[in-house]
Length: 280
Ligand code: PDD
Image (cartoon, rainbow, N blue to C red; front, side, top):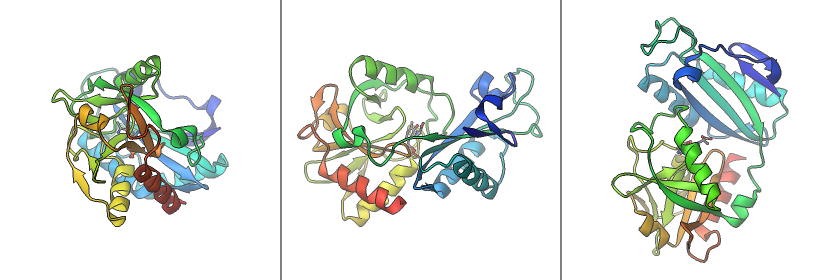
C-alpha cells in the first residue's frame, strides 16, 4: 500500500511518525473514515464538515484545506487502485516535547491517511444481520468529537466477540442506548416509524445517519428523533446500524433476544439499497 504521511506518499513500510506525536502520546487527534464505492468517495463533504467541527472543538490546527484533503484522498484511491473500501484520515496536534499543555499554535498538524480495501456492498453482515450485546457506555462525555480515543469501543467489541456477538450497543447512565461502538443505532417501531437518538454531546453525529434520515423521509417514513431503552429495542420490529463502513446493516438480535423475525428487516434492507444506489 501507498500511504500519505506528513506531506509524502510512501510505501507503508517506509512511513514513520515521531515518537513525540501527540496523537500517539495523548490520543490528541481526530479522524474520519470515508467509504469508497466504484472508486468514488461517498458523502465526502459531510465528512470534511465534521472533521472541521472536531478540529475546532479541540482547538486543533488545520491539516490543510478541504481541496487539499480531497486531492490526497483521490491520489491515494488512484495510487492504490482502490475500487471498494475505506480511506482513513487522522489529524493530530503534531509532535512536541511531552507536556499536558498544548504546544505553540505554530506546531504543524500531523496528518496521516491510508486506504483499506474492503467489501462493502455485499457482505455476510448485510445478508444475515448482526447480533449485538448491550454494555454500559464508559466513554468520555464529548462523543460528538471524533477523537482517536477508541480503547473503550475496542474493549466493548472484544466483549461482544467473547459473548458470540459481533458488536455492542452502549447504554448511558440514564438507561438509554447511546450508539454502537463505531456506528449509530436505530430501531423501527411496530407502526413503521424510524426511531433514532437526537444529536447531542452523547453520540457521534453520523454522516451516514444524516443521509439515511434524509432518504427515510423521502421514502415517507415517519422519523422520531428520541432516545430508546434496550428493552424498547428488543421489542422493536427492526433494529439497524449506520456508519461509513457498514452503510445500513440490520441488527437481528440484542442480548440474545431476536428482533422481529430474527432476520434483516425490510426497512433496513430498503434503506441500505437506496443508500448504496445513491452513493454509486
Ligand atoms: N465510525 N458512532 C461512532 C462512535 C462511530 O465511531 C461512527 C463511525 C459512527 C458513524 O458515523 P459515520 O456514519 O459518519 O461513519 C457513529 C467509523 C466508521 C470508524 O470508527 O471506523
